[in-house]
Length: 290
Image (cartoon, rainbow, N blue to C red; front, side):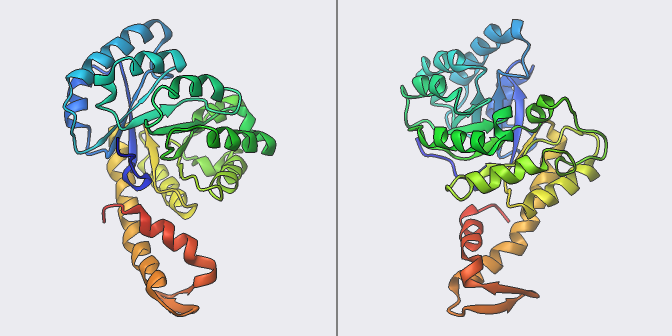
């Protein structure tokens, strides 16, 4: 199994495993999303989980192995993941697993199941209250590093983190306008230096494209080049921001990496090899379509 690259994720569209057109989405995708995440966790009511999981496994087995987009499953818990792994034909249609509510406390139960398929790519989701503390974030980093499976990226679960402090996003409010801005800063400074990429959180204000646009611009400024979305209408806007960002940043990155000068000017900005090489290598490696 080839591990997908972070730059391939784009706007990852969450689709409940109970969706009425699940079979068609597994074949054709949805609104040109580059990655689809099929959810059996928060998007499915408890009474429907068993049915949703069996329906999903059946639909995966019937789906073509090769499609022009990435397919992931978010299992509700380690037991659901085990059910999925017991169907090799279903797993063969997947590009990886999104692990919900991952931290150092939940890691052992997930690892016990994942050890049965150590080549399966994963994306742990950071969305538990332990991340509000520096020691909790560091312990969770250690837990990620203890996993044997290849890690594509770590996803940030905004709604769970907001819910943990009794908040929900209000109209016109980006994630950066909430008290969790400092948590975002912590996740970046703990996980990125350790070599892990992060996916920006969902904007659940579906009918506010202007708010989403402001948020994605900030995502990119903070170094996020992948983002969760919960509605097909969000995909094109997010992808347009990524495309424009790459059109600006990739020429600069390549100019820096190919230059022998220590400092030079490019497009009205100073580029300095000592300070900007890590950024340039990240951007050059993304290979996001432009």
